[in-house]
Length: 225
Image: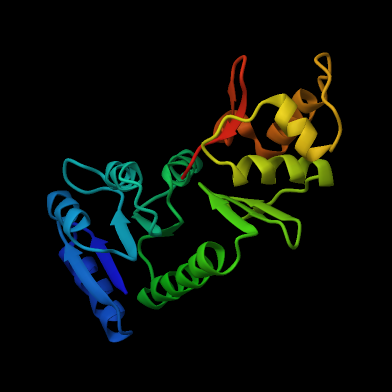
């Protein structure tokens, strides 16, 4: 497993590298964002650990670049302090976890292993589990979580979210949603879909997270990770 570690505090980066290597991981250690971006271009990475505050290009910018290149490996953000807005920003950009400095290296190692277990489970073993930008939806157990918080959805709401997630990146019309979820013929004056989408957004706190996007005059979509 290849892991990128970026931190401009050399002592921290070297300590993380030591613990990861002792556990059998191959580590690319960088002290600048420029070096990290070069590694991202050249190496096949399985995970990245990024400090939020590094020189001219911060960890959020590097995370954005990773996702813009359609690289889907997990990313852990390191930060000296964290607030809800920063956490939401990172998770929306595609971060998988946060750890706050100072931290126990053994805790970081445990987080890395947990992410690999979860990542392999969601993306390789079970096609009925979908993870997109902090949203995890499991069709088998009818469990939906957002940023690790359980969201209580009705069966219809769950089916709507699952259908949008399964078709991530595609705009789904109200007609298509209704006919696939309710298994009935859609009527032009039917506002059932709109009402259910509004309720789902309220449960998601979607004014901030923007999980479900409206494409006016066309339908709804969940963006690809």
